[in-house]
Image (cartoon, rainbow, N blue to C red; front, side, top):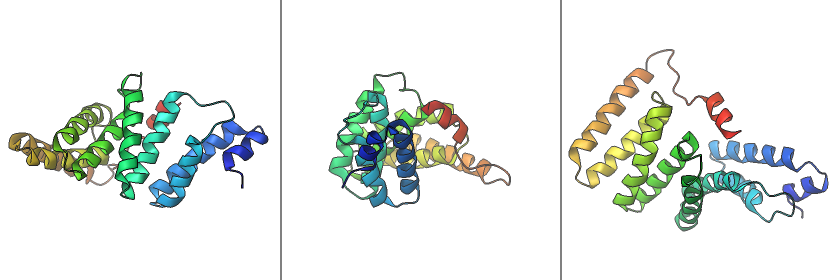
Length: 194
């Protein structure tokens, strides 16, 4: 059975189908349909007999696939993909983007789950710095602050933990006000991905 990507290559629709496949995979991940997302992300990273996307595009897809695998508790494979993606993005022009920040935060959460507190805090702090600058009033930032506070606590950094908890509480108070969106600016993310 041919993959969606192989069928698209034959039909000379590769760029359109790759983009649609990526969006569909992301949608399945958001809906917590991880098995469906996993298959689509793997197709996107699979053998490419057609024009290969650049390394940055692959790194972003690897990060999404790693996140899906993390949700399925397939930590070893998720870790390898996160490491590959983060090393590519860290040395690129994307190392200050919200996509990179989210990937750092997700990897930090994985390291925290593995009780590797120092690596967890290193990646959470990277993500936190970018998120604080790029999306200073978002639910994603609240989540990152709360997880970082927990990791600081595990490291005995009580003042840092308290600071993160207080920032998260204050931000949550702002976001819980009526009419205040609790989301990331999707248009800004879409523009960044182009």
